[in-house]
Length: 135
Ligand code: SF4
Ligand code: SF4
Image 1 (tube, rainbow, N blue to C red):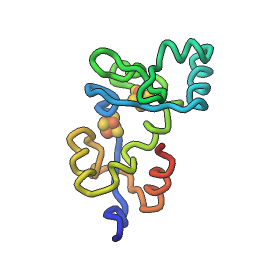
Image 2: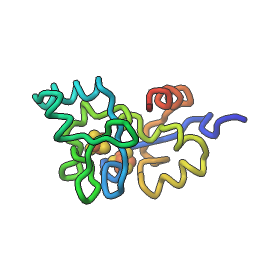
Image 3: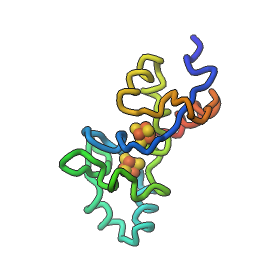
């Protein structure tokens, strides 16, 4: 069966911050990403792990504030944007969201950038590349 996004999709991040906030979630982070972020923040890796991460299902994920905002979200902006984890960089092209058009459409309740009229066109090849990088 042909993927529903064979002809590509449009996407624009409006910076609304919804995907980083308001709901419980899990931003999984690799050791390489931890090292990059710790260096960026001028911290020892162990201090970074203690301050900003927690274990979930045996993996390391970013902490959330009590209101479920990501620990790195401040005034609706990512404070580590250049070094954000690949899970964040590849959103919304996650395999589980791309599995069906229905899944993509239902994600629109969270992300106003999907199929945005001013969005950047992402070809099938670009989407597949992001999907492979996602996890
Ligand atoms: S929910 Fe979508 S539009 Fe809003 S910040 Fe996240 S990616 Fe950007
Ligand atoms: S690291 Fe940045 S982009 Fe990723 S969820 Fe946290 S605030 Fe959002």
